[in-house]
Image 1: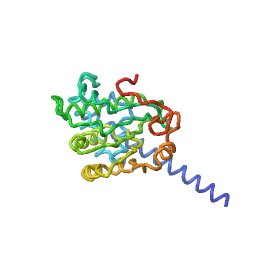
Image 2: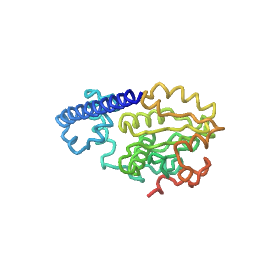
Image 3: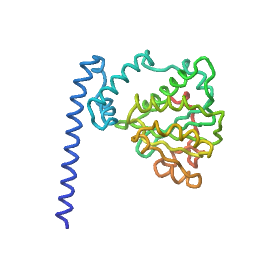
Image 4: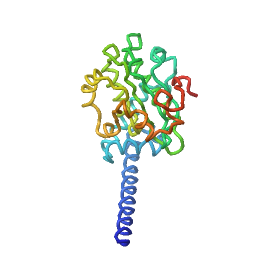
Length: 254
């Protein structure tokens, strides 16, 4: 019995080693190709390239195309390399995004309130909302410790109604998350989900890739605190969900 356990362990280790070597090999091929297409790729670290590679199941061609498209997008959409708060003032004024604490794996936690979002009728419109999404993701990434590459999000849709429904904005956010920040989302908890929200969800769902679908959890109201406590320590969980932390608006997070 002991020898079969040992054999299984060795087999597992061998497979793990092979898979790491394969990923490393594909990463080398990808780097050579993207650098030949866009010399600015040289400034990008292996970790970033690896996220694009994993998002396309180690398919070098698909991952390279995805990454080169991202570089082009970044140059046009974030010409300064970052989004300043003055560019997203209408979005920040809605006070719908909060950021504090880390889950048990060290992933920073963001909390978004769907009922505080109203379609942006101001001059910035959908583009300003997309800049806001980039600002939020970049802010969460900047709070990742050490080797952590993912964040955890809680989308609270309590009180959400048709006046909050903004399919173009949701699809815009999804596209940015999946196409420009692949493998950044660790887990997305949907909490206090009203029945009416499911009408919007049915429209959005087909656009969510399988990798992302696997990270989405609809939380039962009756098990809200216990479900969140499985991955978030009480000291890091917002007070409104039975934890100990007060919510901090994202722009006030240092």
